[in-house]
Image (tube, rainbow, N blue to C red; front, side, top):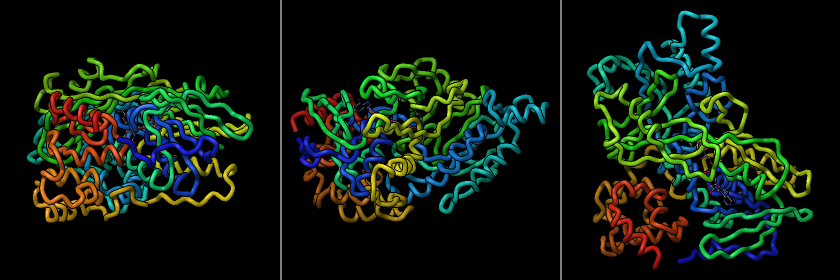
Length: 528
Ligand SMILES: Cc1cc2nc3c(=O)[nH]c(=O)nc-3n(C[C@H](O)[C@H](O)[C@H](O)COP(=O)(O)OP(=O)(O)OC[C@H]3O[C@@H](n4cnc5c(N)ncnc54)[C@H](O)[C@@H]3O)c2cc1C
């Protein structure tokens, strides 16, 4: 099955912008640029979001811990973005409360600027992170970034409460604050879809194998990974959004000089069956000064992560190592009453952060902010993207366009703030109302199924169901109400090609389907 809209146009016709990489940064830039009327092409060598952008902790957050590194600008911009993004995608993103249990022996991450200062002015704290400092951090967190929708921080008692119930009794009090959840891989796909709806050409399973300047243009050669077909495209500007491969693309694909480097830092997560019965997340501080989250996940599961480990080669597939798994289990066992073992782990995933190499001593200390470098000495410009967070992708895209404005005369102004992504054209907090409407219009759905569809597709759930009067009209059920109609939608509208794309990135139904069901889906998709 092919999507005619994604077919590349004539190779003689130069694009304004050619983007390498279909992670969140590439797709975010494609959407922003296409919405300003520019002609845009994007090539992704695997599936959209197949690398880092499906392996995050999935938070739109300011990053409370970065305050201790005095990364005030990063935290402020990220905090400001939370509500802007929430309004544009109230289906795939939602507010979350975070419970930070307090214990007097909690320690700083080794050598953060805040801990160094505290060691000088209050040496008796000996590396401990005092309660007043956390309260001050949360005060900043509440007030740095123009919060209107999200409730503020407060102190809560844990004894005898739902929040305290799964925790060991030594945790008697906690701080509670707000951040947001986002379905990271759906965010990427919806940006790509919106970019395409605004005129961009999105090519998946298409690797950029070389790019060279020919006068004022880039000549970009791509190879279709499925057919082996190569194609030449021309573009005025090249954007390298290769994430972990940003350095490889500079050195090997484009062969331009650059002094900038990338530091690849692996982060792994484990998923267990649901560990507690409320909808808040936990923010745990460890004896090593690091922090991890435990987050309600996909209704029946708990997500725990993450780690920080250097991962020098982007071509080595990141995987949660046994050591990382043990580390996360031990960390969580310091808090939960239920003692977890490797038998409780139902799934793991791992991704590589493509951080800007700022020469930091440890992986945890390397900056999470992004750096955009334009290089135009040899003729047509290239812009390389280093670092960034899911949370700052929209701002990164906007800043990318600002950086390119001198070479794009007449560039239209910023436009993406709060403009809904496909299916997100409804008010924040209206999900339950939408679910009730979908159930009323399609009485054969059950509430769990309707919730999944609204959370995935928002107002587009109606288009996906296309007026089906009963379940039979949606075709076969591959398991967990994943029907033929939905898979067809994902193939024609969301670039899915394989069962893995559907089960682990367009949805997380991989947690529910058996290997046999997944195989049946894969076979059906191959022949569709
Ligand atoms: C463990 C972990 C937890 C995180 N948690 C959070 C969080 O909670 N909140 C948050 O805001 N951020 C978080 N982040 C950061 C965030 O996930 C990343 O900054 C972001 O996903 C990077 O996106 P990207 O588009 O730059 O890279 P990627 O998503 O890796 O995309 C780059 C793409 O380029 C493609 N590519 C490379 N070379 C070529 C080529 N030659 N031709 C065609 N395509 C090519 C790759 O296949 C890849 O898909 C986390 C990161 C990790 C690793």
